[in-house]
Length: 446
Image 1 (cartoon, rainbow, N blue to C red):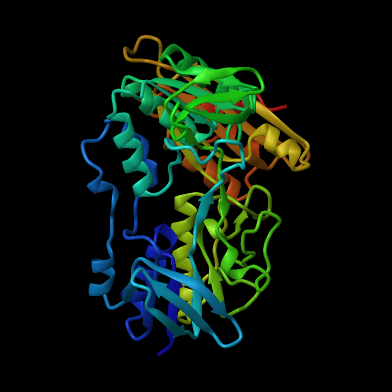
Image 2: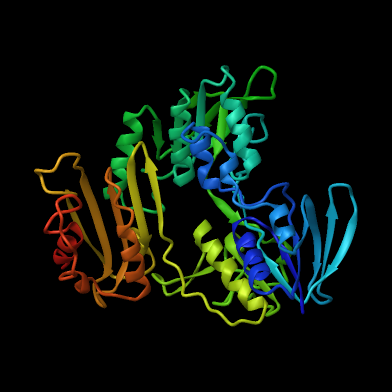
């Protein structure tokens, strides 16, 4: 029997804990988390704020009580003040000020990520916040209940920023979306697809401010609450600001003791081990192996966190298990328009040094004689020399999300685009066309 200490109990930590408690009951597991809740599905925050779901309770899928019942010792609202890696001890202090030093044989770091908050003038004004934790979502929800909040600025047009802009409009408020890039979702998709999302947002009343950088925030007459956003192009009156420019790994506990990547994420191997073989790192605080890049990278997604937690949970208990790598598969649905991607976009592939090309195609999902029919866009990114598929992007008002899973497997298995040209894809008018857009895109590859 070994002593395992797990720091952090959100997606990665919960997955690791359940793996250990379910499969290896002989081990002693202590879980430490500074929050008062665990397993909050932040991907549902915008749905809750936008009144697309009735309640927030269903956004939690586990609890400290559930993990305690399975046999863990769970310390909530408890900070880790220091880790003595040589002595294998974790020093903690709870909200009452009680201190404890917990020894371990194996340590799992699941400390997640922190919102990037730039040091801009006025950033500390009231009604300026990030949205990550449950408490953040609750505060944003309450602010939008205030009739005095009429205009909200969202800074950052990635997934979270775009989803929140939609949520704000659904609450009947004005939404101003600021982004330094010249389009939304630039980190996931190429312009050929994002321009459609930009138009949808604009048509739904979101005021787009692309190629525009926020410089400072101004306060109201009291000097306490935000009243204006100042950018390099103008000044805008607002009563609330949501910062959504991204996240950074929360890796301060291991700084100087464990090897980290350029952005601070813990470097791990395929078993989730850090540079100290008795210490594992999982979730947003760690790197993952990208099958598209064929190298370790930082891809902060809940799905990656869960898989990493499972891998680490088995390895700390003595069962050797390696990750198969990830593709960074992701998706978004805004006003019914669905976008999904996996692997690398064309611009990301070119930036990574690949001689990349794309095979693009656009057509109706089903034959023209079928009602309830919508266009589908698809882009397959591949290496011109090896022909290996590097990524794919799809977008439509149709639910085409399942198709991206095939491309995820294609990237993982290093399939070439030529393999898709005569792929056996069934046809039925209720579902698709006889010349499927996947096949047609592949046939168009140079």
